[in-house]
Picture 1: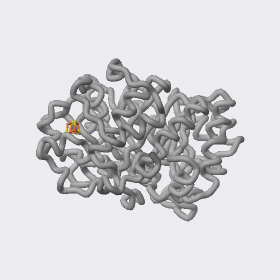
Picture 2: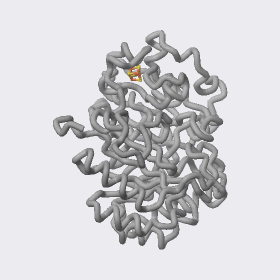
Picture 3: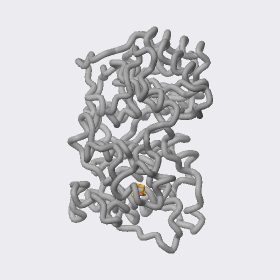
Length: 382
Ligand code: SF4
């Protein structure tokens, strides 16, 4: 690989250590469970890959160890020590369960994890139903509190789907009360067990993103995953903003006065470029986009992989198709390639969850996103 290439993406490398998990969440991308022993790379294989990637990329990157449940990976201490020796920063993303014990948190901090992220998808009933365990909400709260007490920065991840929508403002209030600095919202991609869950409609996506713009100054950092059109929402002039009943519901609960400068840039980001390594060693652009770039045991890395680490996934505007291809926001946004792939099988197609795809005569009508407005669950809670 030529040294003159820009070695920038990816900046976040996710490594799925195991598909074993003591939860069985209904949206799990990895279809994880206690009996799932698919793959499980040993420490040397993982460290060997990270070293190769470091050599190929010539720039450091951040590693996120995920699962399954990372707390069930048998050689976690050794892995953390070796990652640190490589000079790479890393963080852990345990499932909200008993396995992420107080000792697990202490060890993570002691061995150099820069942060911990865990999930809270709703208040207790919603969260525990989605996670399939009546103690999961308790453990999510415990992991957040114990990590904060240990001095370790905490990130809370929340799934955004029809099934969690009504709880979103209550989760925001809860994590504020727990002093969580970073909130990452995962907008559903119908993959893995998540194919049984329901996306927001484009109008609901708009309302949620406008709401995030309004609350973003009340928390240190908000990050969206698979909703890159937040950048279009942020740049919408106030006079052109049209919000719906969901926005009123959300702002009614979080109760923050709306001011004209809410739409200044900043405060929300989309997760940057990523690389995802499955527990079987397959490499993907993300955990939600199952287009393989090769395997970590391949030497030298495949042409596709080398291209990816040099340039990122092919999201240059001229390559996009459908409404995203002709959209004026294709440069800052570009749409979710994972959602386009999940709905069409073509990662370059339009993102059907964006309101612009419908406005542009795009593909929204061909898909069944969300339910009819008359059945909106949040109306019952409003
Ligand atoms: S149409 Fe595509 S590129 Fe344009 S704002 Fe929507 S998702 Fe982004």
